[in-house]
Length: 98
Image 1 (cartoon, one colour):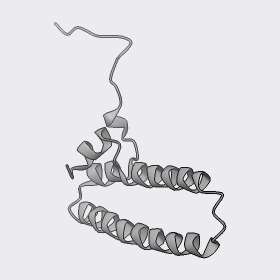
Image 2 (image 1 turned 120 degrees about the vertical axis):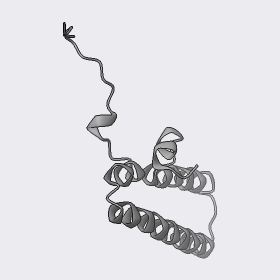
Image 3 (image 1 turned 135 degrees about the vertical axis):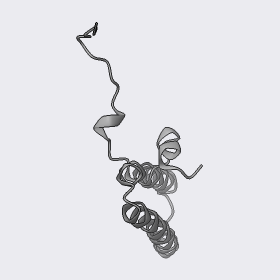
């Protein structure tokens, strides 16, 4: 499942992923707020920073590839930037021809 449209349906776009990571880290941090060893938390933050950096590099490579291929649809979907053409189409007025 690596096509941006599939990722959007699964809430796994780059933005969704980073949002979810942020929520998980906030929840984990709040759960373990009683810990008094700040050095361990700083070390974990450093590890998380490295993981996010690697993830963002991978996202950037895919984004650049889509842009180079002139695949603007998937480049926007990868970032979870809504396309108007993806909007629900429910016209108010219908016109019958013929």
